Image 1 (tube, rainbow over the protein chains, first blue to last red):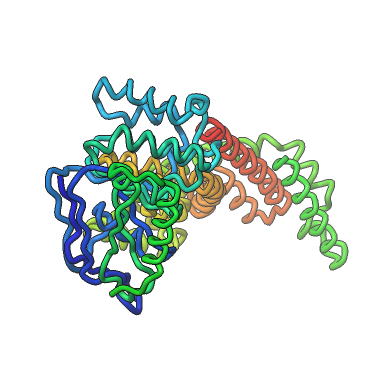
Image 2 (image 1 turned 180 degrees about the vertical axis):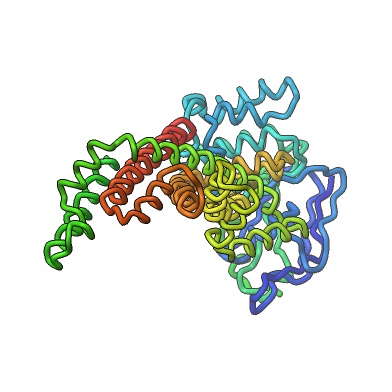
Length: 241
Length: 245
């Protein structure tokens, strides 16, 4: 399994500078990865390019053993004419075991009491959870979550991320985009950082996340998390070209 | 409520006309006195109500046809293909022609019967509906459509349902607004050449210089229009309640 962004250049029409210039990113094993950077640095744009919603002016997205890349984000809405339960059932792929999977997710994500409600009746956090569940029920090899849990409270978010990691990350790639540096550092196998100072951004900085470090037997997890956060922040604010 | 509002406005209008009559000292032949108008409204109601109902039914038919036509053309013209653009251009260009100016042609080709009245009513309320439907059908609702697009479930049916649902309030307002236009269109058609309907009654009254009959016709037209508008708005509210809440 391999997902690679190769020499990606991209700029929005009318912009003074292109956003990316010959940017490269490579993920070659399943796992939980993060894309981090300050607001406006191009995380969502890169996510859309990887998902195929935007086309780069130069370069390509190369994949190996990957058929489906899905992108979900936090402002998505479910159709308003169906209840949450009926919508989730209607978007279930035609595999019988997925019905059980849906029930599992409903329990795990705490959605049972929301099933008869319409989407607009939910809180922002509930909306995020429902939206993410319908994506997790789909057949995918790569799921890009662009601030998909932005409105969910921290304990629920940590719980959900743990569940996603346990359930999916042995065989699928999750690319998580968030402004919450702590969870990015703690859960990720690798953090891809878009530095904010570049015009255009020509290189992603890669830093190993806690996921990998824990496996390497680090004892002082809290101390290491703090130093990792500082390292990521420093990288994000650096001027890379 | 809408009926009461209309009756109130009509009474104010009558009062102003009577005020002009007495201020300018017009004769009863030019502006009949209030009691003459009231007598005509109350005693000859059958002469005005039945043609008004006739007009209303034609207007409803024309309105329904216009909604269907606008939905079909809007659906076909919503894309970016050459075919869609061609339909869009034709629809916009046709709009430049005033339907009232084309109406005589309709009467020449189709006669002064029901078909002509129906067609003119349809054409008059069709364009505002089309412009609105076209706008709604061509504007993606990215936040809702994204999931369906990503997972390969976004067929044209789903796309249209999403866009209609997301713009339901706007659509209900436009459909209700165009109901009045359908009534106007039918009356215009009857006024021009038809031999039935309240427009024809007004035309006859005009030839006889019978202002009381014209004012009575206006009252019954207003009552029928208000009733229809209330029904359309009520149906819209019901639909909204059933779908959204």
